[in-house]
Length: 97
Image 1 (tube, helix red, strand yellow):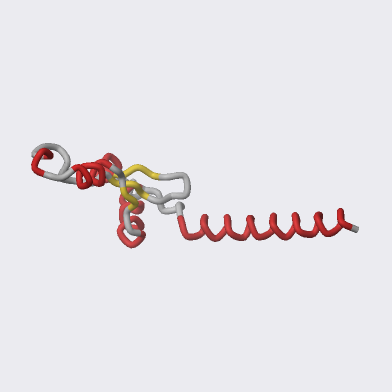
Image 2 (tube, one colour):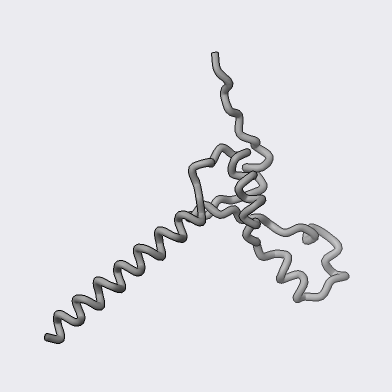
């Protein structure tokens, strides 16, 4: 019998996967002692951040999400947008004649 992959549940709880496959993380240092920090710092730590792609690739592997590739998704979106722009330009040129 072969090995059955078990995803790392602690990693899955710490990160949220976006639609393109990037990983969002929450920032630390905002659970207590916030009165000692200025308001700007407080607003900044409450926002989520995107994990750097080098680390995100490792975390996705641990979560069992090897098929998600954000760079490929971004490339496909650029290609699709370029095709749509080219098609719109061609239809506008045809309509002008």
